[in-house]
Image 1: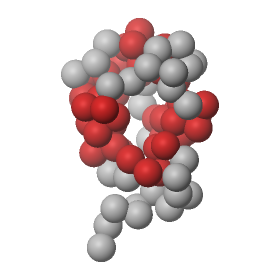
Image 2: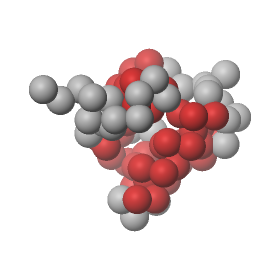
Image 3: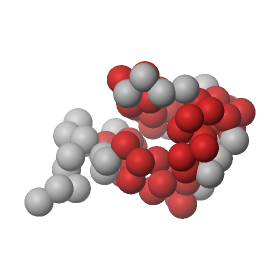
Length: 76
C-alpha cells in the first residue's frame, strides 16, 4: 500500500503548482482516476510512475517517500 506521506506530498505538489489531476495524468501518462486513488491511499503506485512524478515535479523520490524534507536532495 502507498504511504500516507507519499500521497500527501503528491497532493501538496500538485496543488502548489495549480495543477489538476487530469493535467498531471496527461503529463506522466496516467489516468486521472488512478492519480486520485494514489492521492487517497487507495491504489499502490509503480516504481516507474513514482519516478515519472518525481521527474515531473523536479523532486527526489526520497522526498516523495518522506525520507527527506528537502525536495531537491537529488540536486548537486
